Image 1 (cartoon, rainbow, N blue to C red):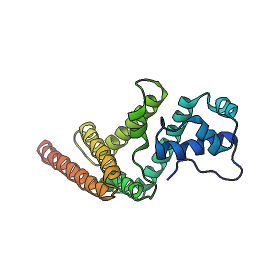
Image 2: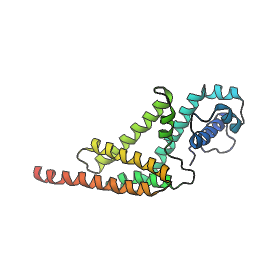
Image 3: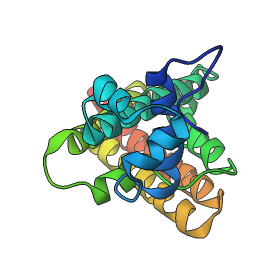
Image 4: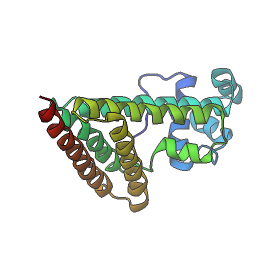
Length: 202
């Protein structure tokens, strides 16, 4: 499930990011010290500072890579479908696939955000993930015909968040299945409200 895949002969910078991705995700961004990352990456301490500037910048790079991976994986699942309703629900299908992986430890952004001080690069990265998810769900809700896609997007993101936390605590894919069913019910109810209004206006 790691966001950083190494191919060929990776550079020291790539090895540092891969080591950070593995250790930060498994153990936490504050728990893991730079000495362990340096040891895992087999580089000198100066290499880390030359490549990233410091630990906070490395955490930011780790979260950026996680967002890139999450975006690509989610879009790949969405593109399996052409019907707007199924495209929206595919976001929760992508969650189910993630939860089923043996090395799933929870949402990388939720975990990093819980450990991070207010302000700074880590909080910025978490905010960007949150904005991406809300924008995606809102756009898909609009595509599916929701009369108030912004409000539905907020509700769907809440379901998505809850599924991630529940899956981590229960160690079960069932949370994504339940969240998908709830998302379908919310969407269908929203579209059903719009249909009579459209008929009256017609």
